[in-house]
Image (cartoon, rainbow, N blue to C red; front, side, top):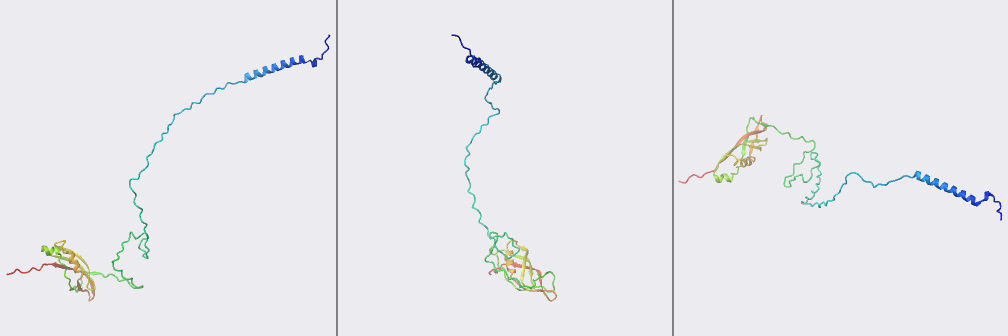
Length: 219
């Protein structure tokens, strides 16, 4: 049987062979491109540099209070006062009040003139005259020891004849009769001294003697 004529355009056998060759060439080209672009990567472990620091944890003992603290100080209460000379920070704890002391004298009336301190005269026309003498108390220790003595004092007699000051100048023997002599002489009274017929305040010397009255011996 004679073969018929075939159109080469529709020859499947010939066409598949061409397609296969084209696919093979394309595959080889792709494989060549992959091989040319391949890069080798190596991954290595990181070795860090520097020294290693070690942190040690220690147990800290609990702090113990050995001494008990003192109690807090009580609050200080300020004292209200009309006196401008007293500072504002004066409190009850800082102020000493004597409840047994006599009250102070009343202030002078408004407009009254303050009495000026009179001078003390050392020279005068008429000397003060003793009008009242209080015997001093003889110290018991000196009486038992049979000790006698005297005290020389400098005293101030004011215009009314009162002794307002007394200072010990000499005491024989010292340290025994001074206190008794001063206590007594502050109670003495004088006729005041005069200067130009006017009573003045003067400073004079006065001696206080301490003697024991001994009984005469028996016959």
